[in-house]
Image (tube, rainbow, N blue to C red):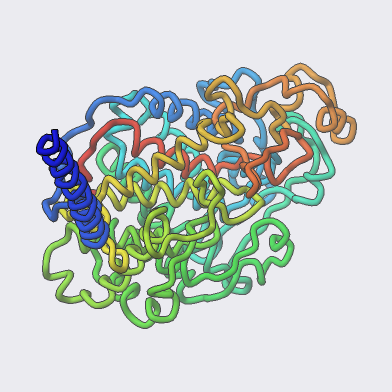
Length: 529
């Protein structure tokens, strides 16, 4: 009995020692993996092939999101897909003998603001250029290109001569005193321009970026239209560069709505797109030379938005480092490397487990920067993250270094999906912020056309009863991405709650970009040219 008992005690001791050893080894392995990489391997992931299996959730959401562009169209509607929308703004521009009837209303009102409209076109172009194959795979490419052309047709007309650009149609003060359908507008529609006497480098450069990027979109399908866009882009960039000034200083009344905090970011953004569109090294010289040193803010991550294009520029120029020939790297290596290093810093700030992760997020992990239109930054950030992830995958770049840790392309993609899923309903409110998607979405969107029955006979003033109505909107603003939640992850669904329930076309551009990147399981990055 005694021997047997002693033998049992010895086995137990060895077992405990083994368990302790296993724990210690496991802890060491975990520490090493955390220090040197989340995948445990420096081997690059396989290069993705053509569009893979469709993720139906994102495909449905993409189709939904593209419909908001149709809702926002001004002008003579061709093949109108929205039953409660009709022709509007048909005389816009007539006082200057211009046809400015096309373009899109920026949000829930009826002003055509050129600055955010041009940004919408640039981001939509970028999405098509990177993920047009995926859009096509789920039957949405034509819709995206049609929406883009509706804007660029307007931008071409808004640039009647080299140093003149019309940047606004309508009077916001008068417009905001009315609550009416765009089809019923009767108030005056004044025009505002920037020119040599009243410059606007920010809006002119953003419009140049829109036209340069769109010229690439239409290069194969309509070479004449593409050439026209590129001609305008070059002229506008020259104007923006030579006659420098803030458009919101030249036009103080826009400060209340789309105030520009700088024009250097737009100049770099436009030059980056013009290099991709032309291959002209002078544009690379611009972004890597003194203007890059003055305006790029290298080493300081920023949020991508209609007002600040730096993070987008950094990711776009990283494309050259990932894919372009060595002669470019040799000639412009230092400057381009500064953009890429800053893009890496942006990515490291977004990854939730990174040592340099931003604390600007909700408890459930949504990037959160501003209570006004809070979804713009997380969705735009997620779009940049998945683009960068695909650059890494396609170029066989296995790791992204964030201080002592390293991350893989799949880590960036997981972050992007987390933001998309939050928007689509995986949040504490169990609500989709994309109107028309899912079982629960905002019913009181701050949008004049959606809030008024199509057959209602109301004028400017008496239409406010629809703003104040306790009934849900009679028309669904399908595809609208509303402002979004507060930091404490609450959402008040009220038409009078502008900061949370008003949608915008630039929100639509970034969500279309994000969803098109996720719509299939894999896609290889393609050449722009």
